[in-house]
Image: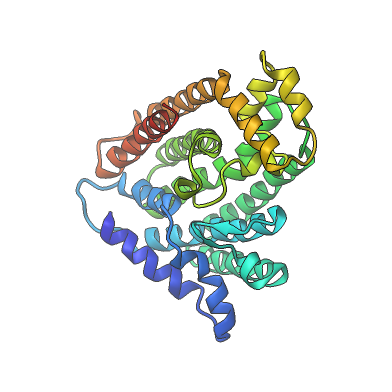
Length: 318
């Protein structure tokens, strides 16, 4: 897998190369900053569920992985503009360094490159990626509509993360299955894994935003609270004993002191534990989806990723 992910890195940089050196610099900014490459890793692992050994990934699996990662990166460029974020992956955000207009256009460029690569993998993959970009937008719109809303429902939260996070991870796995030419039921199991993992992934990310350090996150801690994005741990806390006091703090812009006080309330409540329990349930669903698949290096790798996800957040929250 390490060699395959190195192929992804090289292909990512190649995909964003433009005749305009300035655009190339902006478009490659977050690529060179690093990243876990979860989505291309899942695309490659999903394709490897059709293999009986640890052979190298096909060129199609690598290209599929690059396409989904470019969609992810493009969405980050746009998210940082909307959030007025200054830091991403421990470096200046694109909008902070080059301005909003350049960040928006560079994000569009990344999405265009992703679509071009997907088209080369066939009509099914191209259509899937286009639909997924639409789902990302729908999830983000749902989140924006509930900004600073202390009455946001848990159901609304789940609908938002289904679109903005889980849909791309599901598509990453589905694309891997499609390019590996596995049976339809096999592809559906992979997509179910990706979706369930994606739901767990966002719950974990929302816990980490409240319990991890800025250095660990690669961006400021508690940023969601500042932006009025009330995630599941916050919603659980609002519904509990600390609810009235927390409600008085939130509902509008907060200064650093109010943000830190709100974080302390959430940490003192059962919101963190309830959210981790929810992540564990989704991770279990993800593993269950793999039970119908034959043993393979890809199946083993995906199951291990689901196990690690919950273990890591439990350790961070301890």
